[in-house]
Image 1 (tube, rainbow, N blue to C red):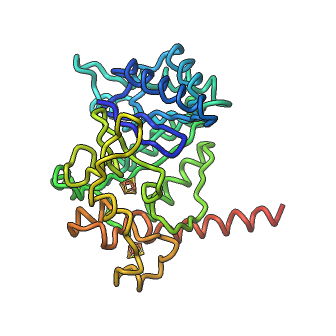
Image 2: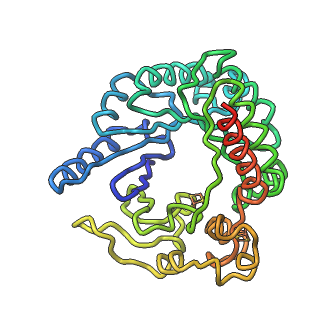
Length: 313
Ligand code: SF4
Ligand code: SF4
């Protein structure tokens, strides 16, 4: 199943694994392109994929649709990744994915490849091994961006795994360690402190997740869950049958929550993630602390150091 997230004039295709049925993905992109061309809109796209099915032909076609970002997840070096993500026949997928990243690196001036490494307590050391393999001590794929995802176990499906997940106040130290390791390997890390009135783009008017049956959600973590369905795409492309959930989501205001109102991280935080709030409290209107406490301090320290180093030159 492919899902789509629409960011005003950009579409990100993800899944499941979107390349399993990329014919469907290209069909949708073609139709959106025609619509955008006829309305004077520039269309951009991106794709989140496991990378195993990427070919030169697919890259060419993605470029045709103004693809600017490909995100590929790796779970570790070859042995670890292959043990965690084998093909149906048991064969590992690591080598194919590295070949795909090398193919993508040939067009890095037009298309940015982001390597996503999901982190929990079980694989942080392995993540460093992977950075060494990918970076200057190994394949030299430093034109790629690195994104560290923090695994969280707050949904009912993942709660059994929550003991392996970092808790909020540990995340800053872990990320700082990994940012430094990535930089040692030649990757350019963008860790400037953020300041945002909205915690996430999905609080803006223009970002939605759309499932293949044309149902509309805000966050992909809620896709397919009836209580979070915000509406559907009508025949003319507009959002119809809008439900209360959309108004409920969009009316989140951190100043109405006592914890957020009194929190030193506001306004830089924006009130947190609605998925975290809902999973923890059953409402979007509560604090949704995630990847802020302890992380913002590290970002500020790094930013200050960067400024001081520039001033010395
Ligand atoms: S979500 Fe958490 S970190 Fe963010 S402002 Fe609210 S209490 Fe503070
Ligand atoms: S999980 Fe939270 S922060 Fe991430 S996209 Fe969804 S709403 Fe935004």
